[in-house]
Length: 238
Image 1 (cartoon, rainbow, N blue to C red):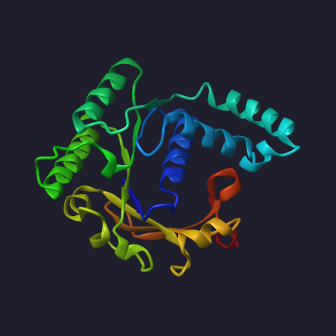
Image 2: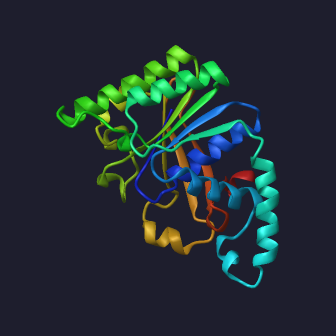
């Protein structure tokens, strides 16, 4: 499963949220957080879980916020969610870690955030190297019989246009190997990343363009910025 977007569109937030939701349902999750250190990801999860406005930690309401974070920590601590702290693991390292986890604790889901930060052979052509990486992740999913959710970056052509499969960076093998490709982009494609940062609940679409398991679809979301999480868009509930 590939979640693709331009930078600052919420790929890491959605990946972390998916990992937490799966772990909360009892599934054993291994997350490779290449985009940021695990401690930072956990910090975001605590804010989202406790519904704590990150800016309140610097205000007079800090005491109440800390209490909510302590409560959130108690909710997250027992979850079967493990993080790998390597900044740029190779596909061999990802595979070895997942196999070891499968053998010791069991494994139901692998999350990789994000594809283009994985280490590849620098001597090889970039397209070939990324293709080998994508095929390695697909092989991992099949061999261990677990889904793999992987974030990927779109090229600059997708900044102001509705994304398509051809705009995936090093697109060919990603498009071919992925069972599902979802694009995370503003509901209004004229919304810049800077404008998104100004809105409290910027509307975002998760557009499933490729889906081998079902039809294409658009999921309406809102990025609840102060809690660093996505929620179902209000207009979609009507």
